[in-house]
Image (tube, rainbow, N blue to C red; front, side, top):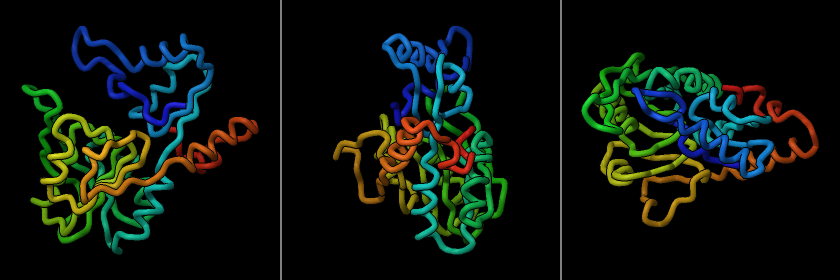
Length: 231
């Protein structure tokens, strides 16, 4: 059981001579004796094919959606921080009865983990925006998205993500950003040094408990999520 699958972003070669470390992690787990893998919100669906055995891909969406539904105003917009997360954003928007917007971005050619956000596809002017992503690492993507949304007239910007990796300058960036709230789950343990006033941590324990019960009782894990955990 790996709530957070390490090195998940290294699932392909971005340039020559780079390793596909996400595959290596699967091989290590297999060699250590694991014959089945349970994980939450993998960075990309193809990681399921790296592991030589059954993979139960869970999602924290039900927990995040329930929380968001209790606090965001009518007319809010669900925002995908890049084109790769549009389908996930659409699922959230459908459940929350919201519209969808997308940030168009590109990664800097000159610096690691630096992101340039170029524009917004969708109407965010004078509306509450909720950025949905699978993880926050250095917070470069999120903060670039926040700046872009604010420049396009967003009234308020929140972030909801499953994995709070918070490496390097992430906490400082999030604290000083225009985000009103950062909503995460507890798939990654957070020490006190990485907690701050804007942060809300939700429990993913119920999701794991339901999934493990289904595994041991040999019933469908996908039915827990209405089949929306397959990507």
